[in-house]
Length: 188
Figure (spheres, one colour):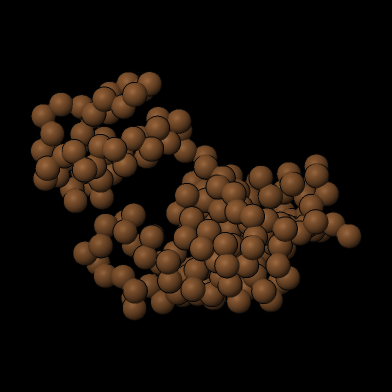
């Protein structure tokens, strides 16, 4: 019997595409059975993007790669038009993950769960079900380094990062200009 691994992707194509390709390789080159879990919204169900539709066509799936859509989230109920994009994505993901435990139990507890950076809240469910969890991060190293450094930087800055007079010096990286930061980071 093949080992069963679940892979969880957020709505972000920057995560969905690499995770999907990684999942195909796990099936084709390592003989695993993959349940590819996708967060969805009521909007996604009625009109998925052309890129998503093409990527997830059954003809693109090896036999042991199974697509499982998490129950759709009603975007209008959990977000509003004033939310910034990253906040909207995180809110939708958080709401979508409420069904994760029951979905994992329905498909059979996998040997591992692989998630993207937006779906790390799934680690709590994995801990509860004793499933090893792994992060698949396709971000550039500089973003990863900034993410680690931000934990130390945040408490040392009063006000918004947008008010800093100079670029941020991240150890081992080129300085990051304030205007290049995500709005959610620049303006707290």
